[in-house]
Image (tube, rainbow, N blue to C red; front, top):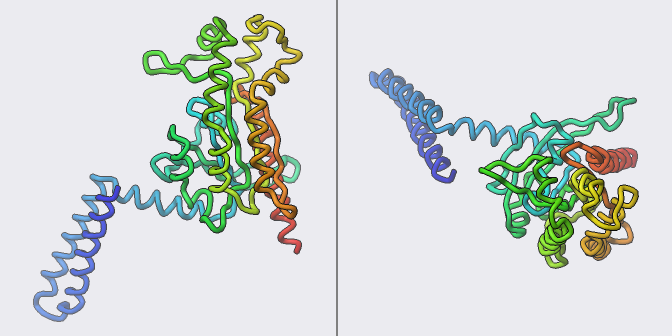
Length: 315
């Protein structure tokens, strides 16, 4: 990308040089020759752009800048690889929506969502999608365009995502739900415990401190711990794979699995909260694959954002 920017700069300098020469020599016999040279240079730039997609990147960057400068309810997602971040986003926005690239590890989605169906009020949203594996990449590579500048963060909702089973691939493709159920049905408690431990290693107090230092501002309204793949857990429980757990208490079981993470996030919220600025913390149990509980989680943040904006206008 850096090499392409340099190439664009060089080509623009060449074109600007020709323009200056043309303006100075247009009244002489060399005018037509200079015009021809200028046209050749312009066509060369177009050709280079067409073959290297330079213009496409420039247009995309300009479009992204324009989109991200608009007021919007902004979401910052954090979670271990395979926990379902992208699936959760697409479950809410629709599978056909495509991400925009902000940095190598940081992409984002934009859309217009209804606040309610009665008034048809809409709210613009921006959702981050972290694509790396290292926790430090999620904070160091976070795009200021997406989350705001360091002195004025724009994030309204932080979503920490965990799940009860990892993404498992076979021949380069992830297992479907039925295959994952079969895998999890054997030695279930050990596999779930191992996955929970992976999340505990990823969402620790030191990392939470860094995450909140990265995104916190008075604009932060909600923090949510999302426990994903509840449909998978319910199927396993219905099969009797976890002694003492039934469908009647499966949600309590899921909450208990991540009780330490929930406590750590609550504690981190309390440490950064101020008397004049409280953060609403909650736990959501969802199924990204089925879309269960996903919209409710996002809509809660979006409505709080809209209410806050409405109060600002009334002042």
